[in-house]
Length: 124
Image (cartoon, rainbow, N blue to C red):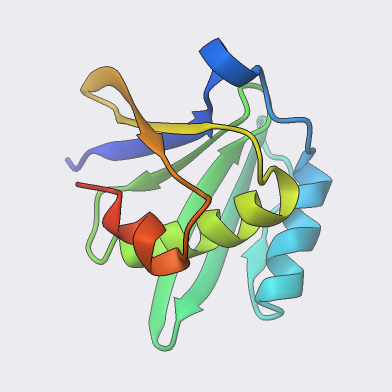
């Protein structure tokens, strides 16, 4: 079984994100009109997006805990493209961290640069 990556606001330094599941849903659909964003089943939004031509990706957004998650599958650029667009629009100044399910060591992600720099900053 594969690992899962998690991305959230840096709660130690910034608190929680203030956007809602509806904000996420609307944002994803603005950027990717063909995306599928499920309802809030058991406090999760399931997001299915063609983030890059021919490259579909799936992410979840945990409404209760305010964290995105995606499976450790190449290319990581696909889910990171979605996260970059959503977070740049909904929480551009909030510090962001990521971790993997087997290691709770929080690592920063920088939203201030380009999409390419954001993807390159994710060392997985």
